Length: 289
Image (cartoon, rainbow, N blue to C red):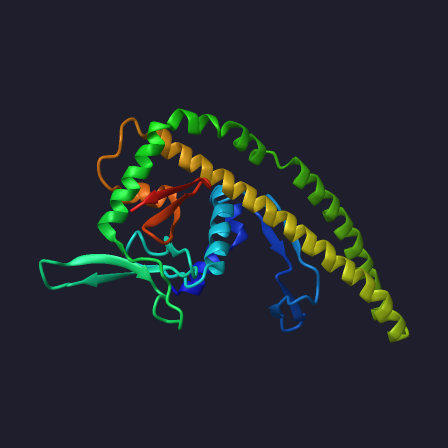
């Protein structure tokens, strides 16, 4: 399976229980030849059109993660749990894995800015020893465990506010209604032009105005949906973080790869031996390394 196929599956709204109507259109009703709809006719997004295959919240979380990875400079996947997690605080590039003295007893794994020697001006952020990253993570997470009750209490109001999408829902319903009205106006324009001999300049003027409104409403709906996705994703990340924190009855004694993957969004490397752990709930903790 190719990466593009995997991506198309991850972004398929049918897994969420929704459907986009008129993704394609028929060019010839005799031959049944179809093509991708590239704006020739309106598309419609139908929510809850069928039972979801996966929880909608999980689907939304995946979309947010895909968007984030597209926006991040130099994102690459790799075999290490640290790949795509450690970021240079100066240039924004990811840190890459390197091995020093690979065939000797002095062998050490380090992480270094991938763009450190690519530009005329070298980044001054230091390389990190992998064992020290692990040690720092254990220390930081244990500091959170020691303050667990206080941290969890602070999330109650945040979760409540992120759960409430009433305002966004009302905006969305209003825009959907306006979009339907404009779509009907466009349909009637096209139908009239197909059955009557109209002055095409007059027709284009009459047609272009509702099309512009249609695009404007559509963009606004996409903005609202994006905001809803971000809100849902943030809530889910916080809930996952809370779950991990609540499940820890004692301190962490050694580096746990699953815990690292589950709670750490990224680590930002700064100068003078300081790094910032940015957790998936949005919390940021600066640490000496």
